[in-house]
Image (cartoon, rainbow, N blue to C red; front, side, top):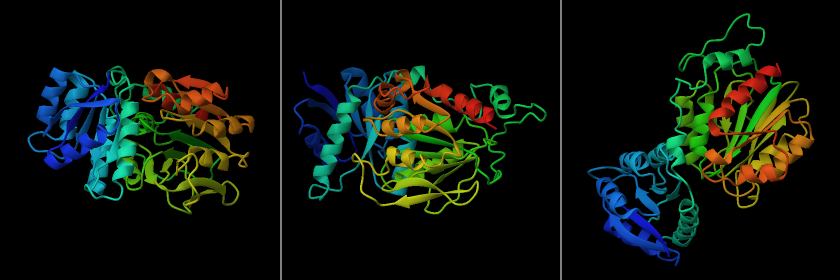
Length: 375
């Protein structure tokens, strides 16, 4: 039996185009189309599709509002169809936080040169979507920030071992530059499901976190900038899209820009800088998690804490193994129960290089504990 797909778009032309792309794979059947979010909700209730492709901008009810209702009432895997504009990127990041499995850039027309590539990507992501258990979004909702489910005292105790001056956590306060001398670093790799996972983790790390955080999220150009802006708005840390030559600072998060590899290099005693390059993609990825992780191998004077979260494939697993063998202090893999796709963390677990297997909502506390302990 083919998987049942619901196609949602306000344009007749786009509904026909997306339906044709979906029908290019015999394992999929388009059971219905909808022209707005309201129709999408009604059809999801009555037809129970295996997955949905959802436009964002639609009359009567937009895709973001429809997604929210669907995920709350009848969780169904959703692939967002996003415009490649800055506004489209921002809305897409919100959709991923609300439970969309992934997104695809909208094809520009029937004669678009990239139409074949869009079809390939859409079908690949639909195959992931129909196998995804999205009910875990209800079991593991994103914690509201800054009202942390983790007690502030737990984090404060981890980061202030002498307890002489207990740190305080205040919403959006403390986005200040900490001492530039870096002694520790946290490196995170993630892919499908990553924006939601990063929201969960980054929003729970306190402002006085005494290490920089470098992140590779598999994502196209433009979208990583919106991801950084969104994470900055919900976090007490300074979050930015990385640029070549940036000097790492404690309490800052650096997101690798889409389409570029990101590495870290020494820039003097206790000083480190980011290098951005257009070198060849590795395993189809640029940025590549292994490229980032491998750049940390010679930096043995740094206390390195390595994290792999939800994502398809095995990017980062070999890099984590090499770092563990090179003396990394901490290696963390996200537990299967909270992963959208249990690929990258599974690969690391299978290489026996993971010290802690943790659900998404416990990773921030563990990082605060291990980084605080190393001060």
